[in-house]
Length: 342
Image (cartoon, rainbow, N blue to C red; front, top):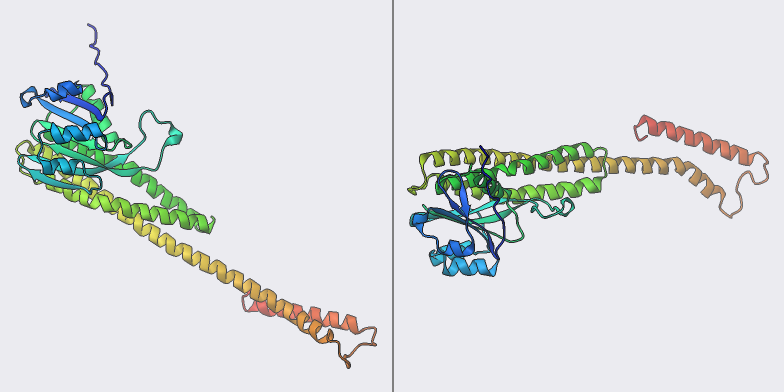
């Protein structure tokens, strides 16, 4: 018996629409084009539309054809947002943050620093609308789309929402691991590396941890609100999965706090190391000045162009002065070593 060939889903084939999927309730889906998505009716099944928030065609569809309240459409198309959840009738307006990674058509050298980017969602019993900016690429949604393509994806909107939250939080782990590895590397570099480079990397790492926490803390509150919402399409199994996601996110926030504290400690250690280097160099300069003081005094006294300088007519005078300066310098060097300056 031949294995049936599963058609591969296209991605971003139409302007402003990344994909439109009709879930079959068994873990699989059927891809829709924009015309079929316009003809969709609730009795057809659960539809998931993923759009580009900053594309004019997508914005026009959300405003005029989505059938959503004006408050919801304005929030979905808003540019600057923080994670939050707002219940509207039997649906949820959800704004979360996800890890922005490299798009499939980008070369490895084109990759930029990983950042958290907004994901706007509207979820009700038979419809999911997600929006993200055209310059961003969220791996969590890609993984869910590939699972649906293989027939192993979510079957309901509550299942889909819980899976989105789970994968958004999952993608944070490698980001935090890389930050922790960088902290360990900087810890080793403090005593052996270039102070300027270490200071700059510490500053960027600490700023990054603060920026990440700025979004992760409200994201935890948003997911917690989803867990306690009484929407009829959110089953108990969905809430249990969301609770596990919240617990994982809380651990990540604590992990992020630990990274921020470690960078603060490393910054203090770096300041101490720099202060010790400055003090050591100052001592060396002071010791050098002390060693040069006796020769400078003798040279200054005998270099004066006045009468009465002793040893002018003595052939051994220069030898005696050199011997005196040498003995004085050796004595000064001994004293400096005794007091620990050298």
